Image 1: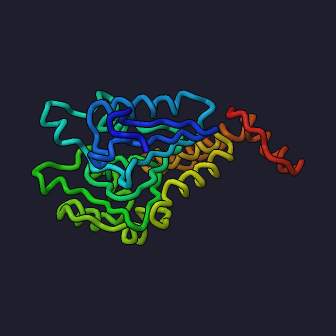
Image 2: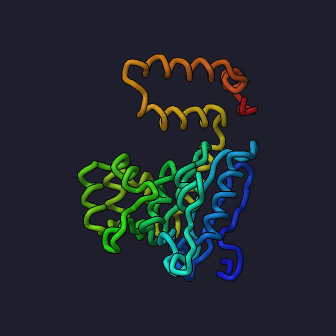
Image 3: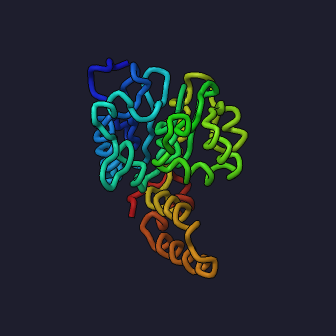
Length: 258
């Protein structure tokens, strides 16, 4: 494990997967300005590099993230970047798939980081919560919007108004956590899922994520047309032709991402 006096975020590109580890374990990986800047750069790099297909974010030292670094905030730091949001990406997530691998605490802004990911893989020992009301503030980095999109609105309301934590098992029952793992295995399982996603057509994966993200705002009478437009666009791609040819020839496809 890297020491706290080194970089606040480690980035490792393993084949087509970018692993980003918040590296401030003595502060439970809370987010200061330097970490937000580093995360912003890493997320933008994930989208910009055609060789990278999936991102995974986790925390060092047995915890995911405890939210904003209040000591840094007291010094005048505010880890919110213009156009990017808290932690450098909660207002502008990557267009490529992003998985949260959670051990320990994912609280306040840390929970909001996990919610900004496409899905959450969690250890059984993890804890989630939005305790902001206990400090006289609100979860303004997307938590109050995204949480009721992931779980029943009344349950999200209870969590947000009480500020109480839930454990990973409860999160799994609610559908917040998609995959539950043994303690210490969240990252391993997240990387395995990332590998499965990365083996698929990057163009089809990208388009699938966009449709899922955008379709909630589509007018009901336009849904068939918009679905068909996306379908025609991807069906005309080189990857679609390659997928069919690989199936016929009984071989692994050679994706080109176009």
